[in-house]
Image (cartoon, rainbow, N blue to C red; front, side, top):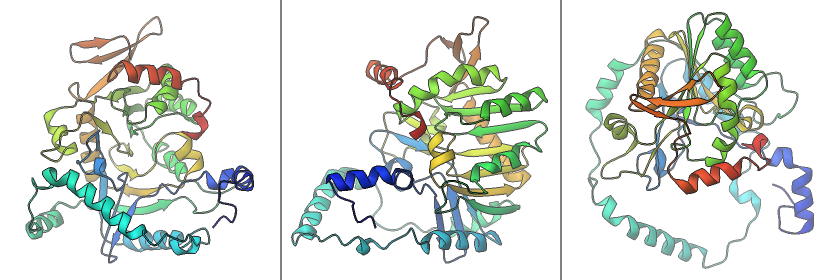
Length: 366
């Protein structure tokens, strides 16, 4: 715990002095059940990740794993849980007022009252999952998997970063490399490497959010200037539509919920439809440089093929915009018979926020 974590001048100075450490987030996502099952991917815990959001809902991808990778996953969790940078909540020494619990109960009661009509649409009795579990066992794909993660403490000078796995995936690729990331702000030699791979004959396909589908307009403000350089590398760039097809809507919303828009949240790499990575890693400065991340690196042609097919579905005209570079260096957003010469947005105010966000000097923190 930070002894100067307060609102005094001393607290502010202490924060500035320790900014690099305090600015870092644990962005890892991992669920372990009795060391029998592991689930990794991009999904957080929140309504919008489970189809219950009232502002927007996400399309996400997780992977369920059993077998030898469970040992690695368990050790990976313990590396964080037992780290010296981790503290039990009560170690912060915050004294709660006597009426705190009553206030919490009142708040929860009010929240439940707001959700009464929505909750009444769902069954009161737990569903029987036995049949689904039997089918799931038959549908599992065989492969070799490894749980990879960033070091829980080191920030500078570390020998290994999760992002290094991109090179492992892309270097052997001969035909196709597919990247799905909700937030895209190139870092380091990303554009140079992509250009080299394309020149060597590799088909590079990138799927990310459009302005209209993003839940973080400010990220799009700073991604905007990279569209042209990305297309100039020869890579194919696709942006997700905020109102996708009925089939994808069904995966994003849980009836009777229908959020105003759907946002891409899947963080996936697929190499030659043989290897894949599914995890928490975005392609932006915060994920690649600042935060800690994790995910499963999997060698499985069957699973990689399924992932590639699903990503291709999200690139279909009813679900995505194909960005085309014109001779005058302008960009068109093409979707079936629809052609736009400016980025699609959810309305005037989002477009204004996107424009003014470009002037904020925060790219390194996004």
